[in-house]
Length: 245
Image (cartoon, rainbow, N blue to C red; front, side):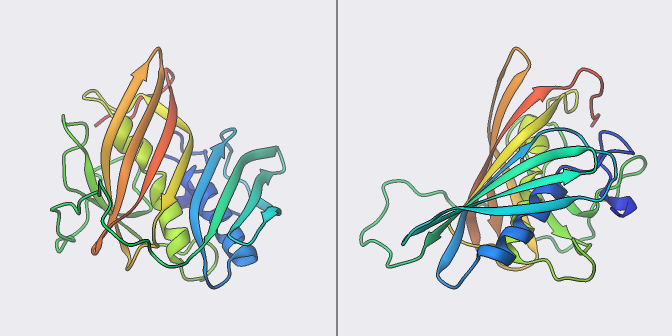
């Protein structure tokens, strides 16, 4: 049964969508990871909102080649499927010679040394959160995050799972406006050049487009050593509720 801190900020009786990516990443890593195969992409489709119910994860191998492995996971409760996740694992090898024509620079934010933000009221994030920029202010939003709870029982959170959990924050960071968050995401796609190092993950909004109630946003994922991946989300306007600043 999900713990109380598993609830979503959108509703006190709704399961947080970030947990679906984390649970699927955990199951896919447990069953299909091996030395030399790198989790390069994780696409999380969020089919429907779910109450705080136990979640079952079923995995299947889609493709297993010399340089690529593709696996799926379906997440369900006793009310039916609530999400689907696809993982792409690529065989690591020798890095090509020469410099790239474009590189994502490391951001100029140092890892936090002060205490994380604590919301004065309402929903409390089930993770440590440092807002480098104010919520909804113009310009690229930036945060540092750190997991504070195990995902399942007392298991340690692996780097793959840590990245999958943090990636869900791409939607609120990229899609927030000056009057709050009016979009709820339908999916997110995390791409990883390498796995994050350490417990801290930084997320920086680097793009947003929206029209007629449909949005897409993107973020760059950082750790203390520099950028390690990207996350792209699609979202739909949520007229019933808007998360305020």
